[in-house]
Image (cartoon, rainbow, N blue to C red; front, side, top):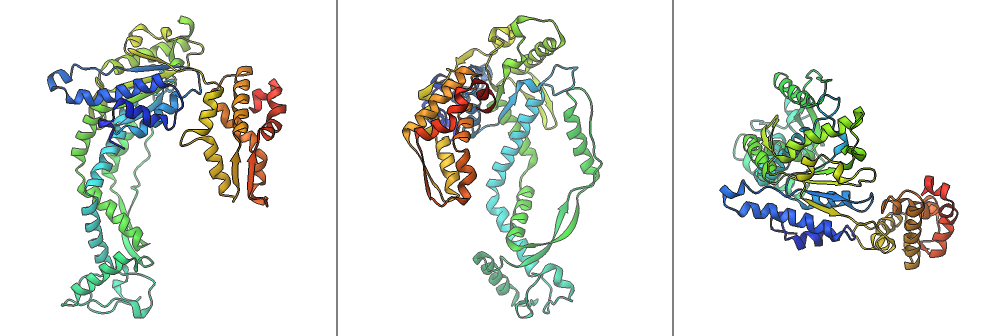
Length: 470
């Protein structure tokens, strides 16, 4: 797959089609928004600063793919991506998380992303340096006699070998050939069962710091713990570990030494500011229902919106890594809006989401496609699960159609939870098979429409049972 900065909107839609059925308008909007991030980077710097992201709000009932689009977008986007529930935030002055914490979390994600990229860039050099350190442990320089269990050199040699396999090391010309022979054995995996004793850093015994306060203070706890960690340096203790594990540990240690964290921080902040994406789920939960403004819960909801407004509009947030501007971070919001309406959001916030996309409710045909077409389709998942028990599971097309029909009927009779209904129906249909699978003699099982009807008829026909079981 191409990197996201070169993906066209059509390619983004095609990638989302592999996992999400329908909702073409939402996919198109997301594809265009991602492509616009790349387009903006190609514009002259003076005009680039003036181009604001076109934030998106997706409106649709639960279970139609809003959150799934966010999940798949996170895999597609080669940029910092954070999904948060708007309902977890509270107005300043209330106990809970303040809205600025999402920017701090996004920056932390960017730090991890850039650190990983930098470590991959120095991985080969780090591996070579780790290999040399490991050879030093296996072959201490300056030991001029065989090392036995009673000798001081035991802590630097492979442990647990018989006497005839211990290494004899000289100061002279034999040292280099022996080292190269060890290197060859290491590459061939002949040392994989040996143990080496090495110093491993243990977590510092710094005092536990917890901050119990109103919103806006949770970042203080992390900062204080970072400060204390400098006063209480990590202690080291000796551990005996196998050679492959030691090599991985030393490689990671060398990679951390080679990476310049100041450079990482600068790149991560720039990456956050220029290409960060925040997906605000459940935004309808902070809308004032029916426009009423009385009662403290409503005040808190509107307060969260007003706190959110400067973040979406563009402000500077203080993080432990430095100042982060939010002017060019893309915000994608979504909500079912069952009780409230998008117009119940404060007008200023509505204006910050110029692109509105409505997702359609799912019907029988969409349910059938969801069960069969995506790469992670439920039919494929359950077939793979039963294969672990040695059972070949097969679904007739009529059986899949029957499950789709029942899902629609139950959604109409009870709460409409969209495609999530398919999970409960599949579990109910395969309940007996899942329980008996380890003891079954037959190696194949075919799910027919009659079997589906038999498993679900009593429950789907009884509305009261459907509410609690399906």
